[in-house]
Structure formats: C-alpha cells, structure tokens
Image (cartoon, rainbow, N blue to C red):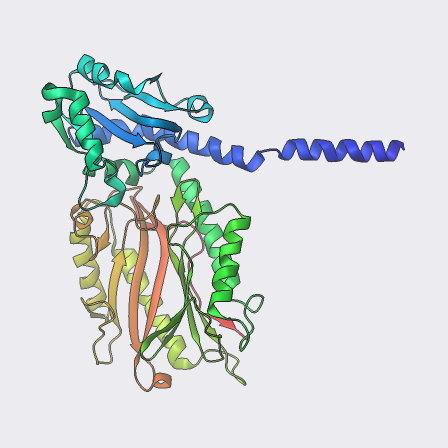
Length: 434
C-alpha cells in the first residue's frame, strides 16, 4: 500500500511539473524576443525611417502579419498597437483595444486602453509622420486593409490623416534586424527541420518500390504535428528530378531505385519559419554508392555554395552583393545563368542564386539577394540579417545522357561582421537510400 501511495505521488508530481512546461517556455522566449526588439531595434528603425509614430491595426478575424511579433492578444472589433518616439532611449508602447492575460503578463507594453483612445493618443503627441502597414511589394508589411485605412483616416481626422505614410521599410528593418534571442530560436527551428528532413530520406522511412512521395510528406507533416511545429509552405515538397526536370511532387508516385529525391520545406517555431532542402539518391541493385556523374553534380554544387558563402558580406545593397557573387562564381569556373531552370548546353556547371531573406516567414521581408525580390534587392544587408543561402547548380552527367542535373542547395544562415555563418549543420553530403 505504501509503495502504491508513493508511486501515485511521484506520478502526480510528474504530471504537475509537465503542465504547460513547453508551452510556457515558448511563451517566455517570445516575450524576451519582443522586449529585446522593442528596446534595441525599434528606436533605430523608427529614426532611420523618419517615423515618429507607428500604428498597427488589427481586426477580429483579420490580424496584421506582425500580430505575433507584437504580442498577439484578443481583438473584439478593432485594435491598435501604437509606438511613439519621443526622442528618448525608449519607444513608448501602447495596446489599444487589444487584451489578454498573456499579452499583459508579457511586460512589453506601457499602456493598455480602449481603441477609442487612438485619436487623443495621437493628438497629444503631435507626430509629424505616422507609419502604417501598407506595401505593394511585401505581404508581411501590408496588413492594413483598404477599409481599415478609411477608418484610420476618419478616426485621426483632417489634421493627422495627411501625415500617414507607408511603414514598408520600417517593418522590413524591424523584422530583419535580429536580437540574440531570435537567433537562438531560429537555430533551434533549423535543427528541428534538418533532423526531420534527413530522417525522412532514410531507410527508416523509405522502402524502394513501396513508399510513395506522399507517404514521406505525410510522415514529415506528422512530425510537425507531434512537435508542435507550424509551416509557412503547406505540405512538404518531396519530389523526384530526372533529365527532363521534376517528375512528380508529393504524389502517389512510388519511389524506385535510381530515383534522385529532393525535399524543399520548412518548419515554424515560436513565430519563426525555416526554409531548406535535402537531396537523396536511391541505390540501384548492386550499387554501393551514387553513380559518379550524380555525385560530381552534387560536389560541384557544394563548391559553388562555398563561393557564394565566402563572397557575401554586410554593408552593401543586396543587388550589389548579388553582382559580386556572380563575378566570383565566373572567376571560379562556373557559368552564370539568369533564367531559372534554363541551363546552357556547355560543359560548365551553370549556377543561379536566390539567397532570400528568411526568418518570421519562409520567404522573409528583409534584404534579399534574389532576383525574385526586386524591392528587397535595394536594401542594405546588415549584420544579424537572416538569409536562406539558396542556389541551383546544373551539371551534365553521363548517366543522364549528358543532360544537366539540377542540384538545389538551401540552408539558413546569419550575416555577421565576418560574413555568412551557419546556424546548424548544413547539407554536406548526398544522402543515400539503400
């Protein structure tokens, strides 16, 4: 009896200790990130962008993309996060019309009030330029709807409505300049996403001739579910590449021997989202290693990535850095192509890069060394910016009749004063499925 009572007590203590343990850890970490961003990043980005007061509007069922960054909370009708630069060391922060125990306990805000206070709050501070989240180039900075804009104009009145300006660059700067706590969380997310992806491309999960691409994608999705992870990309892209390009993606196509498999995906953790790729070859009967041409294509891609990583330095626009990267690649013996999936017919390994911003979204809103982000290419790359170091290398292989194999490499990194530094163990080998 005494033993059973002791066992029950141990079990009770164990259950009690586990109540909300991981959920609370994540909440505490996000609170620390928020406080650090408000203290260290917000003053400099508001002043650099000449914005005295920044208004972020939320509506019930339609929160701004920065809702989680700024604390979450509940909006019954309309609410505002408002930030005012009075010229001191600290930006004033108010949550008007947004409520919630966790938001208030987070300690990041100076004042909680009604949304009806907005007009008085603004007039008492007499800002010259009022930033609002409107952007044609970045969805993450475009949270204010047309009707929301009309409402703001009405609430602020003719004296202050003309002072409304786009906060597009401010939002980009605020999100993309990272504090230490953000880097810690993003590295954790990267390690989780790496482990799941590399495990997915193993004989633990894949049986050639039996397992489908969809089976692998569903297994990865289940890992996200079990670990409380989100995604900004939906269903994982598990695909097969052949001489003519992509054969099938996350479908009922059965994985066969001789297939070249690729994963493109990311996980979401504490308001951060990764973006990475992994590659595997399925051995044919009698093979003990990938064919030489396929292995060479992978090795050439690694060599190109090394050039890219060593060339990227902080302090210049992403566009200028992009040009420097291509010059360095050509000098190292690679070919430059400007059309995605349009390699040349020559013997050179052709390369195209897309080193885009990453962080709170799989495709972030900071400086981007990528042809598909024209506005973000004009932004200066700074230390603490997070980048997905992404490239596509095309190398001919005799096993494919001389056709070029497309090898995509992608892992997430941080820009420092020294250059580009990885945040977790990156892709260094062609995975093998027996």
